[in-house]
Image (tube, rainbow, N blue to C red; front, side):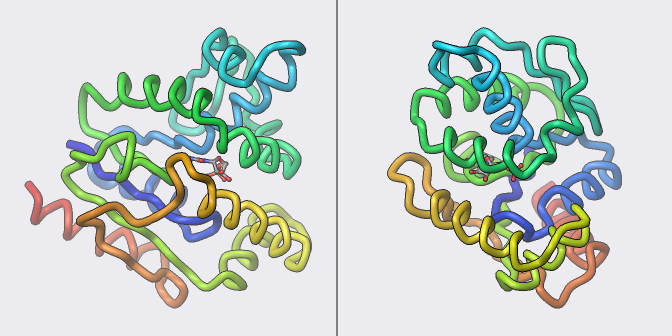
Length: 205
Ligand code: C5P
């Protein structure tokens, strides 16, 4: 079974998806972490296109760590400059094809909660449950700023740029998949969002 959770930055995808996976006993796939790892791989592989760098790299995801060619890069991937680089290379169709292929291979076996921007639309359009999380832009920036210990205004400005890139790119733009249930998390707790999605999973079983 695959539960696809998509939405813009800061809508609560990662926390909700991780929590839901634990509750259901499913595995958790953070596709954004793969774009961040690919951005780092591209930065380190001078002269290579992002797609080449991603194809040659080994990206391993465990529950809470990301390994790039065996090196634990979890902390490095949280940096704002890596988020920005990931957002930029995510507009490259060739790079997307490499990562989508890796994601589909993972999702082919077992039960998964997978989160990102295009899981329900491109990676797993046949997902059993599709959810699109949204929230107020300022509330999203507040959550991210709190999480990262940063200034809300700076986070809001970066978020607007990344949102726009995700929504306006010609290839796999961010949008709710056909059949996705849209949940506005602005005024909901993490637990409430998890409960709602868990109820959708029960119904789909
Ligand atoms: O979710 P996260 O902020 O870690 O993702 C980093 C960037 O990767 C996003 O800003 C987005 O542009 C891109 N991304 C994507 N498709 C996905 C996941 C992430 O384009 N499925």
